[in-house]
Image 1 (cartoon, helix red, strand yellow):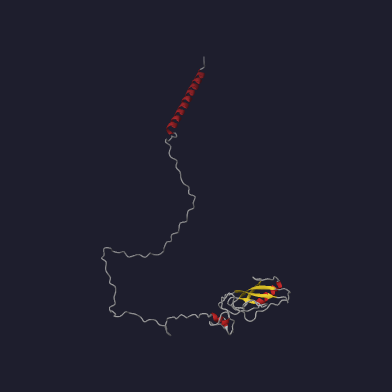
Image 2: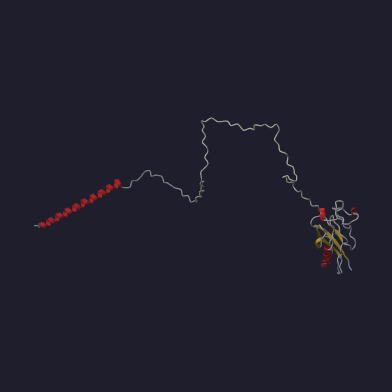
Length: 257
């Protein structure tokens, strides 16, 4: 026969097993019920996606509003129910028969009217003494008979016409030489023609001379230097109406010595 304590032990073990199974099933059933009723629900139809814009531009500084200090002028309140009063323009009690006009201001020793000072015009002829409107602009100063000279604008100028043999020939429109044209000093055994381009100021001085102009027939550098030196020593009549630098030519004819 089985002992009583063993029988009680088996009975307790069977009860414990049944109790554990019941508790386990109960817990799982409760967990399933919680998931069904309190779990995540699926929304159908699904909601539309929401978007948002991100602005990366910098904010412009807002102008600072200035606050005026002090009290602002307040306008009087107008009573619209009050009738409008017409105000008559004030008039003088005495009426004048003539217009009230003041005397015209005239310049005198004690007057307040300023008289502008007239500027004196510069006389161009005064810059070059000895010249007048009656004189020919191309004639040399002191010429006794300027009418025999060529006038300004003549194609041949107003210097000696033609090409004298061995004599320098100067051409400057509207101008002529003062005295004889200096001749070049040279010792070269060569011959030919040297044309020197010259630039003359208003006072008649040759400020620039360049030999080798159109018509030159010799390329001797020493003859060119002699012609340039002679051209710089040449003087023409003064002219206020001529350009600041007037261009012309001097032709030199060199012969064998």
